[in-house]
Image 1: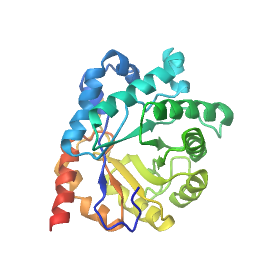
Image 2: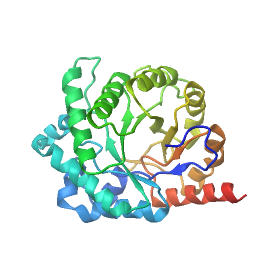
Image 3: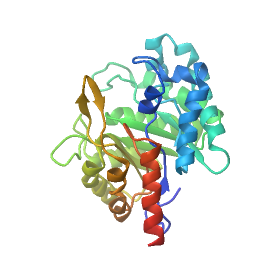
Length: 292
């Protein structure tokens, strides 16, 4: 994985999956991972769309694929099957030139409130990580984490269970400069804990748009020599006719790319509301920087 001192341009990752699958007809409240079995062609369409847009790394449709969340849908017994299917779909879409990172999101339970034990959470993340690894992912992505304790457990479980590289990406959307998680952990505190847990890459995703992510990113860059991963939303969420929407255009989203490069980000992509068009715009911005 590239280091902060690398001279080459950042690696382009993909954009949102959840909002893309919803746009393809996934019903509200439906388990999106179940589409890996029910509608694999639509899941593959999302992956292929990002590859066509220029993504060098794509993730898997396994964000809520841990048994804690799957149990709410009565699908805990399909945890391994759903994760392997999600990895296989992205692997097929990626071909030989694109890497696949297995997506592992939060459990929806708060460790510090004792809603779930550390042991149960570790076992759930380890099970998911091993399933993804066995299906051929290149790395694991513990993303959209809001509780540092849970992120630490996820990283340790993924690392111990597979030995694969692990990206740890938190949501920083609180405080004056958006440099704290909703539970009060700072960028610097998170960096220290996650590196000690074994994270190979540190990141920020979701929560805010490109315009709000720069200050926390600078602080993260100062706090670690690990590569940095960033996937902001397509702007801040807005409520429109009862629906949450993200209105930042691909052009506006990509206009922040030069600043990301100056900060020293190693992986650039998008989260909620971003589309293949957003990724294509980022690819063009990176190419323009590279060729002057």
